[in-house]
Length: 118
Image (tube, rainbow, N blue to C red; front, side, top):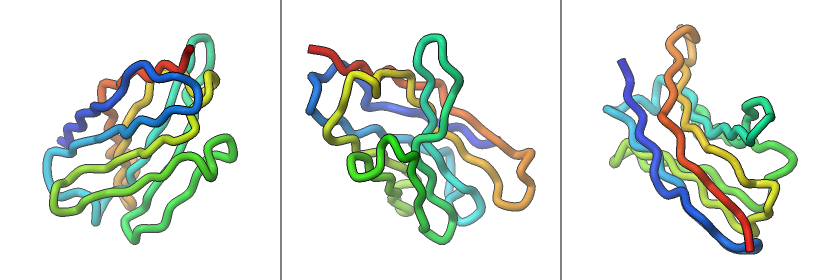
């Protein structure tokens, strides 16, 4: 069982920045693809960014050039640096861990609210 705990959400003005953190319960990054998803009110959950075990990253077109996903293996923590935030980035952000082979091993954090508003 993998536990994921997000932190770092909050209220920020348009153009501002936030850094989200996702702390995992153990050294899982070599076996799991890690991702950030978000869900805005009335919308489906969507992929924001993903980092696979080898370190490659991928981003949704809407956040490319503004968001950066990274991880600290020693701290078992993944990050999402969000710059140039826009009101449309407002959502609950979720951390996800999915095993690279046994994909049914799929875990979610509780979510953290990000609100971009003046």
